Length: 394
Image (cartoon, rainbow, N blue to C red; front, side, top):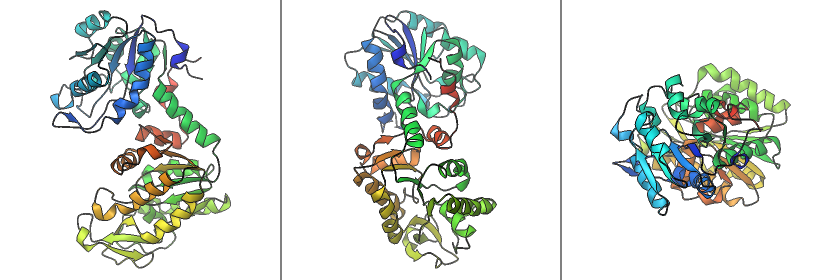
């Protein structure tokens, strides 16, 4: 068992909090503050315990050099508005003399926000100089950036070796939620998988096959499964190298008495950009020049039967190209069906689906919306998260 924040006395201690403030920013303005708001319980807990908090995070991909476009200054301003009674400072450096001086000067219940850790090349390289620089700033390390917990970086993995460390409330909630649904699910347990590529979901499908009762498959990945069982998919996206894998999975599912439910109709068009040509076609009747870009109305009705009865649902990947109005309905309909099932525990992982649910204003109706796409995938694959594995044991 890894230590949690309840295992430490933070009174008067400097705490390095690794948060995930990788938020969307357009023209200097944050367009979604969900990740910042999600971090507030941990920050408020540490403040109540009279900690001095040094927050570090990444933002975007600045490739190891300072870039104003990726500055955490807007995050600092947002935090000030969310915590108006707390004194919050900003350091335009990540490590070094200035950061050390500012962290040493902090009083109890004050916060220092460091600049983007990825402005330093040593961050993604897990370099010793970066680990040293961050470790000098604090007495205790609290890891609460679930979205980067599968990354072996200095601020996620390296620092945990140097300082007494633990999970923050957000990471603890993520780990406990996924552990609970994967080891003690209420049944029927339904997995909904989508997204473009089957190659991204191979290990997820393999792992879930021994845990769930039903897998509903949509998105571009469904066409490789359909072609594997000789289905006509027109010009739809297919990964020919994974046809044998999909065929074997279907056979394995039959042996394990797990239902794999594939779409029976599709919204198709000449291309993703050509919404004007969009029409619904039944399975087996997709014209050679058309590609499936969303699940159709009959498939939504089919999926509804399983979603309605489910007691546990885990969802990763959209049902179609939901960014386009003509190919949005599948993802939206599935989101609404899951939201309506009040008796089930519904867990969503993966950035695309989370963005869609946020757009559809349905977030409050889901039991748990994961803050980490890649990290949640790793847990669904049954794999360990490297950053969490490095934290102090109880």
